[in-house]
Length: 198
Image 1 (cartoon, rainbow, N blue to C red):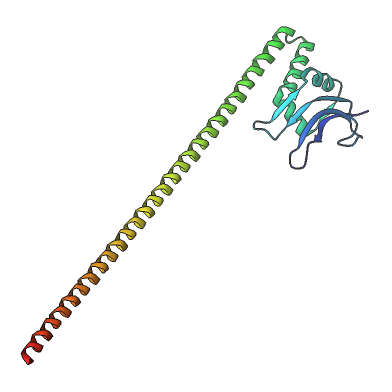
Image 2: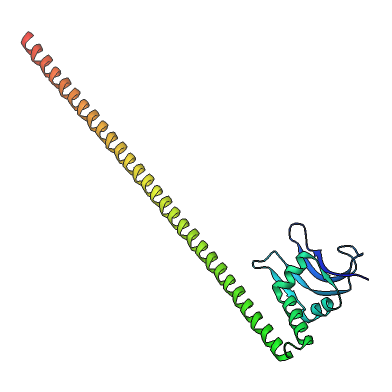
């Protein structure tokens, strides 16, 4: 019975989530499987991969063939390196302790790279947030300045309108006063003319 190590799709539409399984070649993609070896979530950055390294190595030693994507994941997690080191131990090129030491040092180096990538991503996110915050502050300051200008223009317009109204009122008052004076003067002239006529 030929066995493949492959991905079995789970998750909702647009958000795939995979199980890494050892399954019979003839089984459906999401059908029966022989052993669940781990999970792969490509929705996170970097992708989340949890894998049973020893169990996967055992399947590979027993002849299971990984698909291309599964091979890339196994290589990323060091499964293929561990299988290679186990082959070296069987041939007598290394001792068990040396192989384990090499594998541990490789895993630590890989985790350091992943940690550095996560730090870079968090720094980039923080920088983006700070940039967005600065842009928002700038937009708020601009909006406040525009509101202040509009209020000042409105106050100036109302002051001008009041000044114009006051000027009109004083003009009307002076016109009325002039008319009264003219009326009084004509009344006096009329009286003096009446006195002359009499």
